[in-house]
Length: 261
Image (tube, rainbow, N blue to C red; front, side):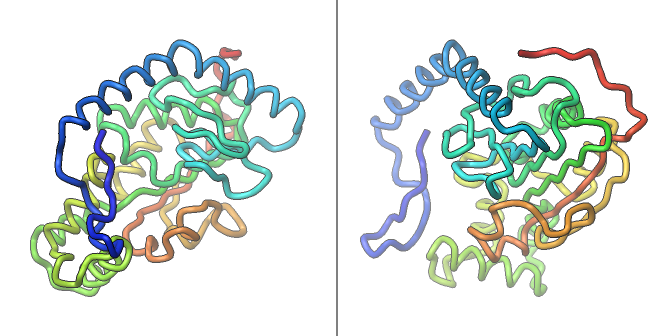
């Protein structure tokens, strides 16, 4: 698929380049890679992850959709691209872990990359892999900011969001229009698929069986001494757009029969 680039020679104006026939070949190549991943990579990465867990006993802390990095040495990541302690995984499939074997799940700016109808199943996977008493933390862009931008609300929140996008994407201030910023948040150049609110995250967690559901911000935590994650370090202004929940798999919840490798 097309990926955004700086569209000027001075590395300004981040956005999609014009469509060309080369993009069709890239789409075909992406499809071939996806088939190869399903046939070969997924099982190989599963084995690699479980070898790592056997060599490193202790709490299992998983960053789902981690990108190439994880919060620190005590974490493992699942993502499209592998890195140190990050394992390539198609997150639409059953996650690599056996039932009730994970202590913490961090899903930081990943749920919005799923179709809305697939999000309940993803929360179900978080619930499945967590031990009784395990904690999940989920962060994503807040859809109410998008609504405010589209409705032309000129409040402090929308002004700060436009300033953040202008800095992050090196747009001139006049280019960071409410409509452009709303579209960037909603679709992220073709990468985002769902708009979610704080209440939508709460409802998804409750629907999966989680309890102790708390709302917070990306720079704060209810259940951790300090909020885990890598997104805020990379994007300090991200505190403006994110909604965050934390929840617990209830200790009384029966573990399902163990499955998986």
